[in-house]
Image (tube, rainbow, N blue to C red):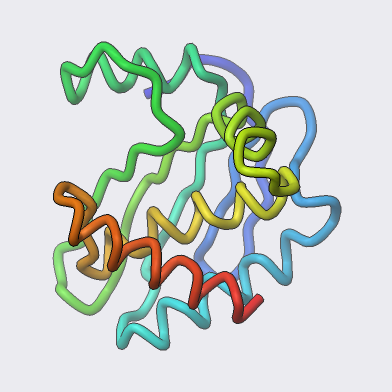
Length: 149
């Protein structure tokens, strides 16, 4: 869906696609271990999760083309799962939004990136964030998951 050259880091059915440099300061293996443990704690298994780490403009184009939303966002999750307990997804994350949000919320870049990464997983395991009550439950679960890193 995105044009351009991407490098990749892959482990345990999770792949990080990135341009130029891989964020996470050499903590990608422990980040993937954490994601896998959250998925398992939710009673699910990973078939294939692809995180595509991109720019605002790249994610905006996906938002326009596929969701018909003319807005910038930090994450878009596409669920391709055929089986309820086996996750398969492409999760697009704007690193520009992550950087801006980290400053706005007084978090490090990696803290905010982890929050967004797990947010996508939580959508896949059944959490939503359309209503205020759903957003509150999502945020509580994000915080619980973040405390497990």
